[in-house]
Amino acid sequence: MAELVSKHGVHQTLINTWKRQAIEGMAGVFSNKAAAADREGELEKLHAKIGQLIVERDLLAKSSGR
Image (cartoon, rainbow, N blue to C red; front, side):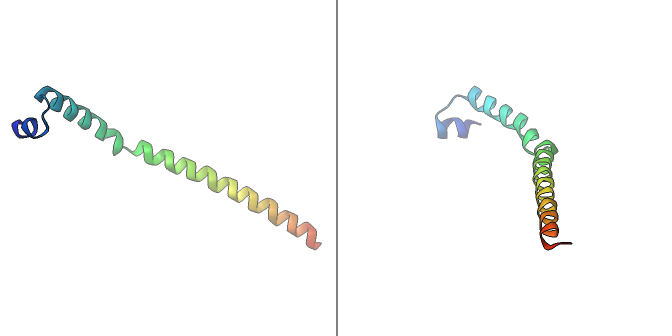
């Protein structure tokens, strides 16, 4: 701790505060909540694409006289 204080010229209390905040924040970084939100967004995009492709398929089928 003394090395960090002297190297960066900040008070030890500030370094301890940063360390505590970093440790508390790391749980959120590595949690599955962010990954689940990303998967949900990707799933919505894929469902939209599937719907678009179905509409296009039906339109082409009608146009070709099937």
